[in-house]
Length: 137
View 1 (cartoon, rainbow, N blue to C red):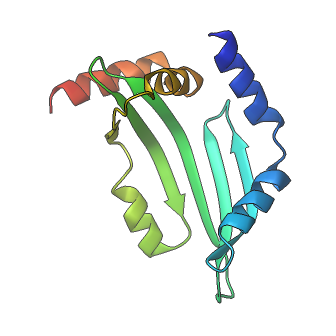
View 2 (spheres, rainbow, N blue to C red):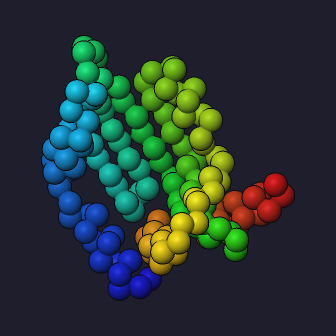
């Protein structure tokens, strides 16, 4: 892994969850309030608890086993598991799980995408199955 990727991984790990909650709440003011957040880069797991503006109850979302990879032609993002405590949101998440979504190639963003793929690299057996499945499209 490159030095830049190691620095980014380190920065992600040391960023306090409270800082992420504070920034997110500033950005989403009047829309939603992030009440809890936890991102485990090594386990590839994100937990978010949020309350929509004007609502009394929170919504829980868990995203697990995600990766960014290059399939030889483009970069793709895949999410293997996503769940929520709300049936409507669970149905939306089900539309995204298990599909390798193409990340648009933007001029000048080739290097950042390469770095992102390195930081969020898939585990080798998973990557082999994904590349094989996406080539059948």
